[in-house]
Image (cartoon, rainbow, N blue to C red):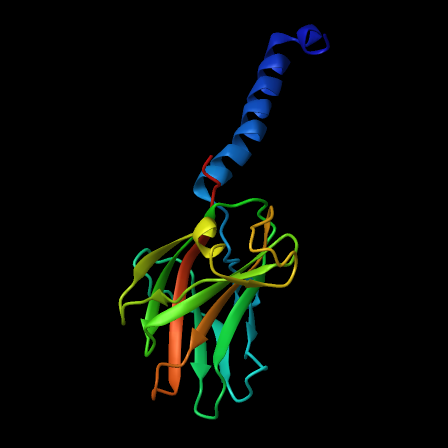
Length: 195
């Protein structure tokens, strides 16, 4: 055994290093993986104006924190005064298999949002509307198993979730006659698979 031939002090160092390396994935899996990257343009997310329904405008920007915990905040805005059905923010994800997402959200001039989660085959699952309160922060927990029961297309096109989460989309639609709306997001994280 190579380890047994090391002096006790070196053996202790190797053992401590092994504990740190082995412990790291366990901690991140329990806490989830953050989907906000401070210092990156739009914190790693991209804006899309739902071009299949022309007219929507909007944007995606990191803003000064207004969240309860003082964390990073990302604001998705939509202007539907010239048409369009939705705007969205998208992000590629390399988190492996996840059980769901959790995030904090604050809405302005909108009372619902939808999520699109894409599995490793490219199959897109769209959530039913997630109801939002107006003007105050709330926490939203999303279970992939629940979303996988809903509308789906592309990829395997079989309505069954396959493996890893590969992309997340958050959709903002207009609220009736109100042409402009926004949603702020904070602390967007994956949740581990519960077995």
